[in-house]
Image 1: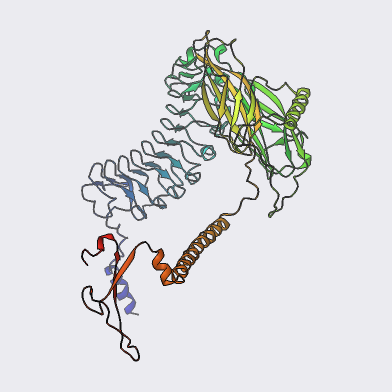
Image 2: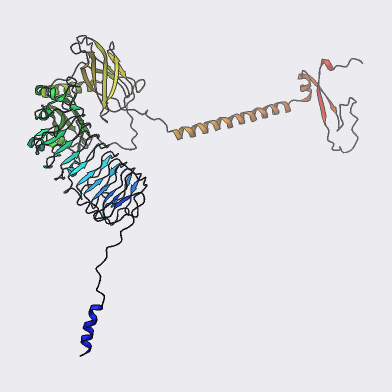
Length: 632
Protein backbone atom coordinates (compact mmCIF):
# COMPACT_ATOMS: atom_id res chain seq x y z
CA UNK A 1 0.00 0.00 0.00
CA UNK A 2 2.96 2.29 0.53
CA UNK A 3 4.09 1.85 -3.03
CA UNK A 4 1.01 3.53 -4.52
CA UNK A 5 1.61 6.98 -2.94
CA UNK A 6 5.20 6.83 -4.14
CA UNK A 7 4.11 6.22 -7.75
CA UNK A 8 1.63 9.07 -7.59
CA UNK A 9 4.39 11.38 -6.50
CA UNK A 10 6.67 10.35 -9.33
CA UNK A 11 4.06 10.87 -12.11
CA UNK A 12 4.44 14.64 -12.38
CA UNK A 13 8.14 14.14 -12.92
CA UNK A 14 7.60 12.16 -16.22
CA UNK A 15 8.12 14.25 -19.42
CA UNK A 16 4.91 15.33 -21.13
CA UNK A 17 4.42 14.25 -24.80
CA UNK A 18 5.33 17.17 -27.15
CA UNK A 19 2.95 18.20 -30.05
CA UNK A 20 4.02 17.31 -33.67
CA UNK A 21 6.48 19.78 -35.16
CA UNK A 22 5.85 21.21 -38.68
CA UNK A 23 7.95 19.72 -41.46
CA UNK A 24 11.10 21.55 -42.33
CA UNK A 25 10.48 23.62 -45.48
CA UNK A 26 12.56 22.93 -48.56
CA UNK A 27 15.31 25.41 -49.33
CA UNK A 28 14.42 28.21 -51.71
CA UNK A 29 15.68 27.53 -55.25
CA UNK A 30 18.69 29.46 -56.37
CA UNK A 31 17.94 32.84 -58.00
CA UNK A 32 14.38 32.74 -56.57
CA UNK A 33 12.69 34.55 -53.71
CA UNK A 34 10.49 32.60 -51.33
CA UNK A 35 8.02 34.11 -48.89
CA UNK A 36 7.83 31.63 -46.00
CA UNK A 37 6.88 33.81 -43.03
CA UNK A 38 3.27 32.83 -43.25
CA UNK A 39 1.22 30.47 -45.34
CA UNK A 40 0.42 30.38 -48.22
CA UNK A 41 3.98 30.12 -49.50
CA UNK A 42 5.07 32.03 -52.62
CA UNK A 43 8.00 31.08 -54.87
CA UNK A 44 8.94 33.99 -57.12
CA UNK A 45 11.45 33.34 -59.94
CA UNK A 46 10.68 35.93 -62.68
CA UNK A 47 13.55 36.73 -65.03
CA UNK A 48 15.97 34.36 -63.27
CA UNK A 49 17.39 32.85 -66.47
CA UNK A 50 16.01 29.39 -65.68
CA UNK A 51 16.23 26.70 -68.36
CA UNK A 52 13.80 24.33 -66.61
CA UNK A 53 11.44 24.23 -63.65
CA UNK A 54 13.57 24.10 -60.46
CA UNK A 55 13.51 20.60 -58.94
CA UNK A 56 13.86 21.85 -55.35
CA UNK A 57 10.47 23.57 -55.17
CA UNK A 58 8.58 23.55 -51.92
CA UNK A 59 5.61 21.32 -52.70
CA UNK A 60 3.45 23.26 -50.21
CA UNK A 61 3.65 26.47 -52.25
CA UNK A 62 0.42 28.22 -53.15
CA UNK A 63 1.92 30.59 -55.75
CA UNK A 64 4.63 29.87 -58.31
CA UNK A 65 5.84 32.56 -60.73
CA UNK A 66 8.29 31.43 -63.44
CA UNK A 67 7.66 34.14 -66.06
CA UNK A 68 10.32 35.66 -68.35
CA UNK A 69 12.69 32.69 -68.31
CA UNK A 70 13.93 30.21 -70.92
CA UNK A 71 11.96 27.11 -69.92
CA UNK A 72 11.39 24.99 -73.04
CA UNK A 73 9.20 22.17 -71.67
CA UNK A 74 7.00 21.26 -68.72
CA UNK A 75 7.60 17.67 -67.68
CA UNK A 76 5.38 15.37 -65.69
CA UNK A 77 7.60 15.43 -62.57
CA UNK A 78 8.14 19.22 -62.53
CA UNK A 79 4.88 20.05 -60.70
CA UNK A 80 4.10 16.68 -59.13
CA UNK A 81 2.46 16.64 -55.65
CA UNK A 82 1.84 20.40 -55.61
CA UNK A 83 -1.76 19.89 -54.56
CA UNK A 84 -2.06 23.29 -52.83
CA UNK A 85 -0.90 25.43 -55.76
CA UNK A 86 -3.41 28.16 -56.60
CA UNK A 87 -1.60 30.38 -59.11
CA UNK A 88 0.94 29.29 -61.75
CA UNK A 89 2.57 31.70 -64.18
CA UNK A 90 4.74 30.39 -67.04
CA UNK A 91 4.36 33.46 -69.25
CA UNK A 92 6.95 34.55 -71.80
CA UNK A 93 9.14 31.47 -71.83
CA UNK A 94 10.07 29.27 -74.80
CA UNK A 95 7.74 26.38 -73.96
CA UNK A 96 7.13 24.15 -76.97
CA UNK A 97 5.95 21.02 -75.19
CA UNK A 98 3.71 20.30 -72.23
CA UNK A 99 3.70 16.67 -71.20
CA UNK A 100 0.37 14.89 -70.88
CA UNK A 101 -0.65 15.01 -67.23
CA UNK A 102 1.89 17.72 -66.34
CA UNK A 103 -0.85 19.54 -64.34
CA UNK A 104 -2.65 16.41 -63.12
CA UNK A 105 -1.83 17.04 -59.43
CA UNK A 106 -2.84 20.73 -59.50
CA UNK A 107 -6.43 20.10 -58.56
CA UNK A 108 -6.66 23.35 -56.57
CA UNK A 109 -5.20 25.58 -59.30
CA UNK A 110 -7.27 28.68 -60.09
CA UNK A 111 -5.16 30.53 -62.69
CA UNK A 112 -2.77 29.22 -65.35
CA UNK A 113 -0.78 31.66 -67.51
CA UNK A 114 0.90 30.12 -70.58
CA UNK A 115 0.90 33.21 -72.79
CA UNK A 116 3.94 34.30 -74.80
CA UNK A 117 5.27 30.80 -75.50
CA UNK A 118 5.69 28.61 -78.58
CA UNK A 119 2.90 26.08 -78.22
CA UNK A 120 1.58 24.87 -81.59
CA UNK A 121 -1.22 22.58 -80.39
CA UNK A 122 -3.11 21.66 -77.24
CA UNK A 123 -4.19 18.04 -76.84
CA UNK A 124 -6.77 16.37 -74.67
CA UNK A 125 -4.35 15.23 -71.93
CA UNK A 126 -2.28 18.37 -71.43
CA UNK A 127 -4.81 20.16 -69.19
CA UNK A 128 -6.05 17.05 -67.44
CA UNK A 129 -6.68 17.44 -63.71
CA UNK A 130 -7.46 21.19 -63.66
CA UNK A 131 -10.94 20.74 -62.22
CA UNK A 132 -11.04 24.11 -60.41
CA UNK A 133 -9.41 26.31 -63.06
CA UNK A 134 -10.93 29.78 -63.44
CA UNK A 135 -8.51 31.66 -65.72
CA UNK A 136 -6.69 30.12 -68.69
CA UNK A 137 -4.43 32.49 -70.67
CA UNK A 138 -3.01 31.02 -73.91
CA UNK A 139 -2.50 34.17 -75.97
CA UNK A 140 0.58 34.97 -78.07
CA UNK A 141 1.46 31.39 -78.87
CA UNK A 142 1.54 29.58 -82.21
CA UNK A 143 -1.54 27.47 -81.63
CA UNK A 144 -2.96 26.00 -84.82
CA UNK A 145 -5.03 23.19 -83.31
CA UNK A 146 -7.14 22.87 -80.18
CA UNK A 147 -8.43 19.39 -79.39
CA UNK A 148 -12.15 18.95 -78.81
CA UNK A 149 -11.57 17.49 -75.34
CA UNK A 150 -8.78 19.82 -74.24
CA UNK A 151 -11.10 21.82 -71.94
CA UNK A 152 -13.24 18.99 -70.63
CA UNK A 153 -11.93 19.01 -67.04
CA UNK A 154 -12.39 22.79 -66.61
CA UNK A 155 -15.48 23.34 -68.78
CA UNK A 156 -17.78 23.95 -65.78
CA UNK A 157 -15.48 26.28 -63.84
CA UNK A 158 -13.68 28.33 -66.52
CA UNK A 159 -14.51 32.05 -66.39
CA UNK A 160 -11.79 33.61 -68.55
CA UNK A 161 -10.39 32.05 -71.76
CA UNK A 162 -7.89 33.97 -73.88
CA UNK A 163 -6.86 32.40 -77.22
CA UNK A 164 -5.90 35.63 -78.97
CA UNK A 165 -2.87 36.14 -81.22
CA UNK A 166 -2.58 32.56 -82.43
CA UNK A 167 -2.92 30.74 -85.77
CA UNK A 168 -6.31 29.09 -85.24
CA UNK A 169 -8.30 28.47 -88.40
CA UNK A 170 -10.84 26.18 -86.74
CA UNK A 171 -12.14 25.81 -83.20
CA UNK A 172 -14.03 23.03 -81.40
CA UNK A 173 -17.19 25.14 -81.31
CA UNK A 174 -19.21 22.41 -79.61
CA UNK A 175 -16.67 22.30 -76.75
CA UNK A 176 -16.67 26.11 -76.46
CA UNK A 177 -20.45 26.04 -76.28
CA UNK A 178 -20.24 24.04 -73.04
CA UNK A 179 -18.38 26.80 -71.16
CA UNK A 180 -21.49 27.89 -69.28
CA UNK A 181 -19.67 30.11 -66.73
CA UNK A 182 -17.28 31.93 -69.06
CA UNK A 183 -17.39 35.73 -68.80
CA UNK A 184 -14.61 36.76 -71.22
CA UNK A 185 -13.78 34.98 -74.46
CA UNK A 186 -10.84 36.32 -76.48
CA UNK A 187 -10.59 34.95 -80.04
CA UNK A 188 -9.10 38.02 -81.71
CA UNK A 189 -6.12 38.03 -84.09
CA UNK A 190 -6.53 34.52 -85.40
CA UNK A 191 -7.38 33.03 -88.82
CA UNK A 192 -11.04 32.18 -88.24
CA UNK A 193 -13.08 32.40 -91.46
CA UNK A 194 -16.50 31.31 -90.21
CA UNK A 195 -18.59 30.92 -87.08
CA UNK A 196 -21.39 28.33 -86.99
CA UNK A 197 -24.88 29.53 -86.18
CA UNK A 198 -25.71 29.27 -82.49
CA UNK A 199 -22.10 28.83 -81.38
CA UNK A 200 -22.60 31.17 -78.38
CA UNK A 201 -26.25 30.49 -77.59
CA UNK A 202 -25.51 28.64 -74.31
CA UNK A 203 -22.95 31.14 -72.96
CA UNK A 204 -25.46 32.97 -70.79
CA UNK A 205 -22.81 34.63 -68.58
CA UNK A 206 -20.71 35.94 -71.47
CA UNK A 207 -19.85 39.61 -70.93
CA UNK A 208 -17.16 40.21 -73.56
CA UNK A 209 -16.58 38.55 -76.93
CA UNK A 210 -13.59 39.76 -78.94
CA UNK A 211 -13.23 38.46 -82.53
CA UNK A 212 -11.37 41.36 -84.11
CA UNK A 213 -8.79 40.82 -86.86
CA UNK A 214 -9.88 37.45 -88.18
CA UNK A 215 -11.08 36.45 -91.64
CA UNK A 216 -14.80 36.63 -91.04
CA UNK A 217 -16.89 37.71 -94.01
CA UNK A 218 -20.22 37.17 -92.29
CA UNK A 219 -21.46 36.63 -88.74
CA UNK A 220 -24.59 34.52 -88.27
CA UNK A 221 -27.20 35.90 -85.87
CA UNK A 222 -27.05 34.22 -82.49
CA UNK A 223 -29.89 34.02 -79.93
CA UNK A 224 -27.51 35.40 -77.29
CA UNK A 225 -27.01 38.60 -79.32
CA UNK A 226 -30.73 39.21 -79.62
CA UNK A 227 -31.40 38.79 -75.87
CA UNK A 228 -28.70 41.15 -74.58
CA UNK A 229 -27.91 44.75 -75.52
CA UNK A 230 -24.66 44.89 -77.50
CA UNK A 231 -22.06 47.56 -76.94
CA UNK A 232 -18.71 48.10 -78.54
CA UNK A 233 -16.95 49.33 -75.42
CA UNK A 234 -17.57 48.56 -71.75
CA UNK A 235 -17.44 52.21 -70.66
CA UNK A 236 -20.80 53.20 -69.27
CA UNK A 237 -22.44 49.93 -70.21
CA UNK A 238 -24.81 48.18 -67.80
CA UNK A 239 -23.76 44.98 -66.06
CA UNK A 240 -25.97 42.88 -68.33
CA UNK A 241 -24.55 44.29 -71.56
CA UNK A 242 -22.44 42.19 -73.91
CA UNK A 243 -19.32 43.87 -75.26
CA UNK A 244 -18.94 42.63 -78.85
CA UNK A 245 -15.97 43.43 -81.11
CA UNK A 246 -15.79 42.40 -84.80
CA UNK A 247 -13.49 45.08 -86.20
CA UNK A 248 -10.69 44.23 -88.60
CA UNK A 249 -12.62 41.52 -90.44
CA UNK A 250 -13.34 41.59 -94.21
CA UNK A 251 -17.10 41.83 -93.70
CA UNK A 252 -19.36 41.22 -96.69
CA UNK A 253 -22.10 43.76 -96.18
CA UNK A 254 -25.24 42.14 -97.53
CA UNK A 255 -28.58 41.21 -96.07
CA UNK A 256 -27.02 38.59 -93.79
CA UNK A 257 -25.55 41.38 -91.63
CA UNK A 258 -28.72 43.46 -91.30
CA UNK A 259 -29.23 42.04 -87.78
CA UNK A 260 -25.89 43.49 -86.68
CA UNK A 261 -26.62 46.83 -88.33
CA UNK A 262 -29.91 47.10 -86.42
CA UNK A 263 -28.25 46.76 -83.01
CA UNK A 264 -27.67 49.89 -80.94
CA UNK A 265 -23.91 50.03 -80.52
CA UNK A 266 -21.30 52.61 -79.77
CA UNK A 267 -18.59 53.52 -82.29
CA UNK A 268 -16.34 50.66 -83.32
CA UNK A 269 -13.90 49.77 -86.10
CA UNK A 270 -16.03 47.56 -88.35
CA UNK A 271 -15.82 48.31 -92.09
CA UNK A 272 -17.21 46.73 -95.26
CA UNK A 273 -14.78 44.90 -97.53
CA UNK A 274 -17.35 43.84 -100.16
CA UNK A 275 -19.41 44.06 -102.34
CA UNK A 276 -17.46 46.53 -104.50
CA UNK A 277 -20.11 49.22 -104.15
CA UNK A 278 -19.64 49.25 -100.35
CA UNK A 279 -15.96 48.31 -100.11
CA UNK A 280 -14.01 50.46 -97.68
CA UNK A 281 -17.04 52.18 -96.16
CA UNK A 282 -17.54 52.40 -92.40
CA UNK A 283 -19.97 49.69 -91.34
CA UNK A 284 -22.17 51.90 -89.16
CA UNK A 285 -22.34 54.63 -91.81
CA UNK A 286 -23.97 52.35 -94.41
CA UNK A 287 -27.72 52.63 -94.48
CA UNK A 288 -29.79 49.59 -93.70
CA UNK A 289 -31.38 49.71 -97.15
CA UNK A 290 -27.97 49.16 -98.73
CA UNK A 291 -27.52 45.76 -97.09
CA UNK A 292 -29.09 43.82 -99.97
CA UNK A 293 -28.76 40.31 -101.35
CA UNK A 294 -29.20 38.97 -104.88
CA UNK A 295 -31.45 35.96 -105.46
CA UNK A 296 -29.83 32.96 -107.13
CA UNK A 297 -29.80 32.47 -110.89
CA UNK A 298 -29.05 29.12 -112.49
CA UNK A 299 -26.33 29.75 -115.07
CA UNK A 300 -25.59 26.22 -116.21
CA UNK A 301 -27.36 22.88 -116.06
CA UNK A 302 -26.86 19.56 -117.74
CA UNK A 303 -28.84 19.04 -120.95
CA UNK A 304 -31.04 15.93 -121.31
CA UNK A 305 -28.81 12.98 -120.56
CA UNK A 306 -29.21 9.34 -121.66
CA UNK A 307 -27.10 6.55 -120.17
CA UNK A 308 -27.42 2.76 -120.24
CA UNK A 309 -28.39 1.00 -117.04
CA UNK A 310 -25.49 0.13 -114.78
CA UNK A 311 -23.38 3.10 -115.87
CA UNK A 312 -22.69 6.25 -113.76
CA UNK A 313 -24.35 9.57 -114.53
CA UNK A 314 -23.33 13.09 -113.49
CA UNK A 315 -25.96 15.85 -113.30
CA UNK A 316 -24.57 19.37 -113.03
CA UNK A 317 -26.13 22.60 -111.87
CA UNK A 318 -24.37 25.95 -111.43
CA UNK A 319 -25.90 29.05 -109.87
CA UNK A 320 -24.75 32.53 -108.86
CA UNK A 321 -26.14 34.90 -106.27
CA UNK A 322 -25.29 36.94 -103.19
CA UNK A 323 -24.68 35.20 -100.86
CA UNK A 324 -23.42 32.17 -102.78
CA UNK A 325 -26.38 29.84 -103.18
CA UNK A 326 -26.46 26.28 -101.92
CA UNK A 327 -27.49 23.68 -104.50
CA UNK A 328 -29.67 20.69 -103.64
CA UNK A 329 -31.24 17.98 -105.78
CA UNK A 330 -34.69 16.42 -105.72
CA UNK A 331 -35.35 13.06 -107.37
CA UNK A 332 -38.18 12.42 -109.84
CA UNK A 333 -40.06 10.81 -106.94
CA UNK A 334 -39.77 13.99 -104.85
CA UNK A 335 -37.07 12.85 -102.43
CA UNK A 336 -34.25 15.14 -101.35
CA UNK A 337 -31.00 13.55 -102.48
CA UNK A 338 -27.72 13.54 -100.60
CA UNK A 339 -24.72 11.32 -100.04
CA UNK A 340 -25.65 7.65 -99.99
CA UNK A 341 -24.40 4.32 -101.26
CA UNK A 342 -25.67 5.11 -104.77
CA UNK A 343 -25.33 8.89 -105.00
CA UNK A 344 -22.91 11.66 -104.08
CA UNK A 345 -23.77 15.35 -103.83
CA UNK A 346 -20.86 17.77 -104.19
CA UNK A 347 -20.73 21.36 -102.88
CA UNK A 348 -20.24 22.70 -106.43
CA UNK A 349 -23.73 21.51 -107.41
CA UNK A 350 -22.89 18.19 -109.10
CA UNK A 351 -24.98 15.11 -108.36
CA UNK A 352 -23.29 11.83 -109.29
CA UNK A 353 -25.29 8.61 -109.56
CA UNK A 354 -22.73 5.86 -109.13
CA UNK A 355 -24.80 3.05 -110.70
CA UNK A 356 -27.97 3.90 -112.59
CA UNK A 357 -31.04 1.68 -112.61
CA UNK A 358 -34.04 1.71 -114.95
CA UNK A 359 -36.14 3.31 -112.20
CA UNK A 360 -33.80 6.30 -111.93
CA UNK A 361 -35.05 7.86 -115.13
CA UNK A 362 -37.10 11.03 -115.00
CA UNK A 363 -36.79 14.75 -114.34
CA UNK A 364 -34.43 15.74 -111.55
CA UNK A 365 -34.88 19.18 -109.98
CA UNK A 366 -31.96 21.40 -109.07
CA UNK A 367 -32.76 23.90 -106.28
CA UNK A 368 -30.36 26.81 -105.67
CA UNK A 369 -31.22 28.79 -102.53
CA UNK A 370 -29.75 31.63 -100.47
CA UNK A 371 -31.03 34.26 -98.07
CA UNK A 372 -32.69 36.22 -100.91
CA UNK A 373 -34.67 33.37 -102.46
CA UNK A 374 -34.28 30.29 -104.60
CA UNK A 375 -34.22 29.20 -108.23
CA UNK A 376 -34.97 25.81 -109.78
CA UNK A 377 -33.99 24.02 -112.96
CA UNK A 378 -34.99 20.65 -114.42
CA UNK A 379 -32.56 18.06 -115.75
CA UNK A 380 -33.93 15.04 -117.58
CA UNK A 381 -32.24 11.65 -117.27
CA UNK A 382 -33.10 8.69 -119.47
CA UNK A 383 -31.85 5.27 -118.40
CA UNK A 384 -31.77 2.82 -121.30
CA UNK A 385 -31.18 -0.93 -121.43
CA UNK A 386 -27.73 -2.16 -120.40
CA UNK A 387 -25.18 -2.57 -123.22
CA UNK A 388 -24.62 -6.08 -124.63
CA UNK A 389 -21.73 -7.98 -123.09
CA UNK A 390 -18.44 -7.93 -124.98
CA UNK A 391 -16.25 -11.01 -125.31
CA UNK A 392 -12.73 -10.60 -124.03
CA UNK A 393 -11.17 -12.51 -126.99
CA UNK A 394 -13.49 -11.16 -129.64
CA UNK A 395 -11.95 -10.92 -133.11
CA UNK A 396 -14.44 -8.41 -134.45
CA UNK A 397 -13.15 -4.99 -135.34
CA UNK A 398 -14.64 -1.54 -135.57
CA UNK A 399 -15.26 -0.40 -139.12
CA UNK A 400 -12.28 1.49 -140.45
CA UNK A 401 -12.46 5.17 -141.20
CA UNK A 402 -10.86 7.01 -144.02
CA UNK A 403 -7.71 8.89 -143.21
CA UNK A 404 -6.29 9.59 -139.79
CA UNK A 405 -8.34 8.24 -136.87
CA UNK A 406 -8.04 11.64 -135.18
CA UNK A 407 -9.31 13.48 -138.25
CA UNK A 408 -12.35 15.67 -137.76
CA UNK A 409 -15.58 14.28 -139.11
CA UNK A 410 -19.01 15.88 -139.23
CA UNK A 411 -21.68 14.36 -137.00
CA UNK A 412 -23.47 11.40 -138.50
CA UNK A 413 -27.08 11.48 -139.58
CA UNK A 414 -28.09 9.23 -136.70
CA UNK A 415 -26.47 11.48 -134.10
CA UNK A 416 -27.98 14.52 -135.79
CA UNK A 417 -31.46 13.00 -135.64
CA UNK A 418 -30.88 12.00 -132.02
CA UNK A 419 -29.83 15.55 -131.19
CA UNK A 420 -32.86 16.91 -132.99
CA UNK A 421 -35.18 14.60 -131.06
CA UNK A 422 -33.47 15.51 -127.77
CA UNK A 423 -33.81 19.19 -128.61
CA UNK A 424 -37.48 18.84 -129.41
CA UNK A 425 -38.05 16.88 -126.22
CA UNK A 426 -36.18 19.51 -124.19
CA UNK A 427 -38.28 22.21 -125.78
CA UNK A 428 -41.39 20.62 -124.25
CA UNK A 429 -39.95 20.56 -120.74
CA UNK A 430 -37.81 23.70 -120.55
CA UNK A 431 -36.15 26.50 -122.46
CA UNK A 432 -34.77 25.69 -125.89
CA UNK A 433 -31.07 24.81 -126.13
CA UNK A 434 -28.48 27.34 -127.23
CA UNK A 435 -28.03 27.45 -131.00
CA UNK A 436 -25.36 30.10 -131.18
CA UNK A 437 -22.45 27.72 -130.54
CA UNK A 438 -21.98 24.61 -132.68
CA UNK A 439 -19.44 21.82 -132.73
CA UNK A 440 -19.48 21.12 -136.46
CA UNK A 441 -16.68 18.55 -136.59
CA UNK A 442 -15.16 16.32 -133.97
CA UNK A 443 -12.78 13.37 -133.83
CA UNK A 444 -11.17 11.24 -131.17
CA UNK A 445 -9.05 14.03 -129.66
CA UNK A 446 -10.11 17.22 -131.46
CA UNK A 447 -13.23 19.29 -132.09
CA UNK A 448 -14.01 22.40 -134.14
CA UNK A 449 -16.11 25.00 -132.29
CA UNK A 450 -17.90 27.76 -134.19
CA UNK A 451 -20.03 30.67 -133.04
CA UNK A 452 -21.79 33.55 -134.82
CA UNK A 453 -20.64 37.13 -134.98
CA UNK A 454 -21.48 39.16 -131.84
CA UNK A 455 -21.67 42.62 -133.34
CA UNK A 456 -24.56 43.72 -131.05
CA UNK A 457 -22.13 43.56 -128.11
CA UNK A 458 -19.92 46.71 -128.25
CA UNK A 459 -16.31 46.72 -127.15
CA UNK A 460 -15.60 42.99 -127.26
CA UNK A 461 -12.07 42.34 -126.08
CA UNK A 462 -11.91 38.59 -126.52
CA UNK A 463 -13.86 35.34 -126.34
CA UNK A 464 -13.52 32.77 -123.60
CA UNK A 465 -14.16 29.06 -124.12
CA UNK A 466 -14.68 26.94 -121.03
CA UNK A 467 -15.35 23.23 -121.09
CA UNK A 468 -15.06 20.06 -119.04
CA UNK A 469 -15.64 16.37 -119.66
CA UNK A 470 -18.08 13.97 -118.09
CA UNK A 471 -15.25 12.29 -116.16
CA UNK A 472 -14.28 15.31 -114.00
CA UNK A 473 -15.45 18.73 -112.84
CA UNK A 474 -12.32 20.71 -113.72
CA UNK A 475 -13.08 23.57 -116.09
CA UNK A 476 -10.57 24.28 -118.84
CA UNK A 477 -10.38 27.85 -120.18
CA UNK A 478 -9.22 29.12 -123.57
CA UNK A 479 -8.89 32.82 -124.44
CA UNK A 480 -9.62 33.56 -128.12
CA UNK A 481 -9.00 36.85 -130.00
CA UNK A 482 -12.00 39.07 -130.60
CA UNK A 483 -11.93 38.63 -134.39
CA UNK A 484 -12.18 34.82 -134.24
CA UNK A 485 -15.35 32.88 -135.04
CA UNK A 486 -14.02 29.36 -134.56
CA UNK A 487 -11.45 27.47 -132.56
CA UNK A 488 -9.96 23.99 -132.83
CA UNK A 489 -9.67 22.09 -129.56
CA UNK A 490 -6.88 19.55 -129.74
CA UNK A 491 -6.38 18.35 -126.17
CA UNK A 492 -9.53 16.24 -125.78
CA UNK A 493 -9.80 12.65 -124.60
CA UNK A 494 -11.37 10.02 -126.81
CA UNK A 495 -14.70 8.50 -125.87
CA UNK A 496 -15.89 11.27 -123.53
CA UNK A 497 -18.77 13.71 -123.42
CA UNK A 498 -17.94 17.42 -123.09
CA UNK A 499 -19.97 20.45 -121.99
CA UNK A 500 -18.71 23.64 -123.64
CA UNK A 501 -19.68 27.29 -123.37
CA UNK A 502 -18.45 30.39 -125.20
CA UNK A 503 -18.51 33.78 -123.44
CA UNK A 504 -17.87 37.23 -124.86
CA UNK A 505 -15.60 39.41 -122.71
CA UNK A 506 -16.38 43.09 -123.23
CA UNK A 507 -16.11 46.45 -121.49
CA UNK A 508 -19.32 47.62 -119.89
CA UNK A 509 -19.84 51.22 -120.93
CA UNK A 510 -22.05 51.95 -117.91
CA UNK A 511 -19.62 50.88 -115.21
CA UNK A 512 -16.33 50.90 -117.11
CA UNK A 513 -15.58 47.40 -115.83
CA UNK A 514 -14.90 44.20 -117.70
CA UNK A 515 -18.00 42.05 -118.03
CA UNK A 516 -18.92 38.75 -119.69
CA UNK A 517 -21.94 37.67 -121.67
CA UNK A 518 -22.64 34.06 -122.67
CA UNK A 519 -22.71 33.45 -126.41
CA UNK A 520 -23.99 29.90 -126.10
CA UNK A 521 -23.27 26.38 -124.96
CA UNK A 522 -23.00 23.01 -126.67
CA UNK A 523 -22.57 19.37 -125.73
CA UNK A 524 -20.63 16.87 -127.84
CA UNK A 525 -18.86 13.54 -127.56
CA UNK A 526 -15.49 12.59 -128.96
CA UNK A 527 -15.09 9.46 -131.02
CA UNK A 528 -13.71 6.35 -129.33
CA UNK A 529 -10.13 5.42 -130.11
CA UNK A 530 -10.06 2.66 -132.79
CA UNK A 531 -7.49 -0.11 -133.05
CA UNK A 532 -6.54 -1.27 -136.59
CA UNK A 533 -8.14 -4.63 -137.43
CA UNK A 534 -5.78 -7.60 -137.78
CA UNK A 535 -2.68 -5.79 -136.60
CA UNK A 536 -0.05 -8.38 -135.65
CA UNK A 537 1.33 -8.42 -132.17
CA UNK A 538 4.80 -7.07 -131.48
CA UNK A 539 6.34 -10.47 -130.50
CA UNK A 540 5.06 -12.01 -133.71
CA UNK A 541 6.59 -9.21 -135.79
CA UNK A 542 9.93 -9.60 -134.06
CA UNK A 543 10.07 -13.37 -134.67
CA UNK A 544 9.13 -12.97 -138.31
CA UNK A 545 11.86 -10.42 -138.91
CA UNK A 546 14.50 -12.67 -137.33
CA UNK A 547 13.43 -15.69 -139.40
CA UNK A 548 13.38 -13.69 -142.64
CA UNK A 549 16.82 -12.20 -141.98
CA UNK A 550 18.25 -15.63 -141.19
CA UNK A 551 16.76 -17.07 -144.39
CA UNK A 552 18.35 -14.31 -146.48
CA UNK A 553 21.76 -14.97 -144.94
CA UNK A 554 21.54 -18.74 -145.51
CA UNK A 555 20.37 -18.28 -149.10
CA UNK A 556 23.26 -15.89 -149.82
CA UNK A 557 25.81 -18.38 -148.45
CA UNK A 558 24.33 -21.22 -150.54
CA UNK A 559 24.40 -19.14 -153.72
CA UNK A 560 28.00 -18.15 -153.08
CA UNK A 561 29.05 -21.80 -152.58
CA UNK A 562 27.12 -22.84 -155.71
CA UNK A 563 28.90 -20.18 -157.80
CA UNK A 564 32.29 -21.31 -156.57
CA UNK A 565 31.50 -24.95 -157.36
CA UNK A 566 30.33 -24.09 -160.86
CA UNK A 567 33.46 -22.10 -161.64
CA UNK A 568 35.71 -24.85 -160.34
CA UNK A 569 33.83 -27.42 -162.42
CA UNK A 570 34.00 -25.36 -165.60
CA UNK A 571 37.74 -24.62 -165.38
CA UNK A 572 38.66 -28.14 -164.34
CA UNK A 573 36.81 -29.90 -167.23
CA UNK A 574 38.49 -28.02 -170.14
CA UNK A 575 41.27 -29.98 -172.13
CA UNK A 576 44.85 -28.63 -172.01
CA UNK A 577 45.12 -27.88 -175.69
CA UNK A 578 41.90 -25.98 -175.69
CA UNK A 579 42.85 -24.15 -172.63
CA UNK A 580 46.14 -23.08 -174.19
CA UNK A 581 44.45 -22.01 -177.37
CA UNK A 582 41.82 -20.06 -175.69
CA UNK A 583 43.97 -18.50 -173.01
CA UNK A 584 45.00 -15.03 -174.10
CA UNK A 585 47.85 -14.90 -171.62
CA UNK A 586 50.20 -17.77 -170.91
CA UNK A 587 52.02 -18.46 -167.67
CA UNK A 588 55.63 -19.46 -167.03
CA UNK A 589 56.03 -21.81 -164.13
CA UNK A 590 59.34 -22.54 -162.50
CA UNK A 591 60.04 -25.44 -160.26
CA UNK A 592 61.82 -24.27 -157.17
CA UNK A 593 61.79 -27.58 -155.30
CA UNK A 594 62.23 -25.65 -152.07
CA UNK A 595 64.89 -23.28 -153.47
CA UNK A 596 64.76 -19.53 -153.12
CA UNK A 597 64.17 -18.04 -156.53
CA UNK A 598 63.06 -19.04 -160.03
CA UNK A 599 65.01 -21.54 -162.19
CA UNK A 600 65.11 -21.07 -165.97
CA UNK A 601 66.67 -24.45 -166.82
CA UNK A 602 64.44 -26.95 -168.50
CA UNK A 603 63.29 -29.88 -166.44
CA UNK A 604 65.44 -33.04 -166.40
CA UNK A 605 64.04 -36.17 -167.89
CA UNK A 606 62.26 -38.45 -165.51
CA UNK A 607 64.19 -41.62 -164.58
CA UNK A 608 62.78 -44.95 -165.35
CA UNK A 609 61.06 -46.80 -162.57
CA UNK A 610 58.58 -45.77 -159.99
CA UNK A 611 58.03 -42.09 -159.43
CA UNK A 612 59.30 -40.54 -156.29
CA UNK A 613 56.93 -38.42 -154.26
CA UNK A 614 58.44 -34.98 -154.15
CA UNK A 615 56.97 -31.77 -152.90
CA UNK A 616 57.15 -29.29 -155.70
CA UNK A 617 56.50 -25.58 -155.44
CA UNK A 618 55.57 -23.79 -158.63
CA UNK A 619 56.16 -20.10 -158.98
CA UNK A 620 54.10 -18.84 -161.85
CA UNK A 621 54.08 -15.45 -163.41
CA UNK A 622 52.27 -14.25 -166.51
CA UNK A 623 53.93 -14.43 -169.89
CA UNK A 624 53.26 -11.66 -172.14
CA UNK A 625 54.93 -9.35 -174.57
CA UNK A 626 57.07 -7.86 -171.86
CA UNK A 627 58.52 -11.29 -171.11
CA UNK A 628 59.41 -12.32 -174.64
CA UNK A 629 63.07 -13.23 -175.14
CA UNK A 630 65.20 -10.67 -176.85
CA UNK A 631 67.65 -13.02 -178.41
CA UNK A 632 67.72 -16.36 -180.17
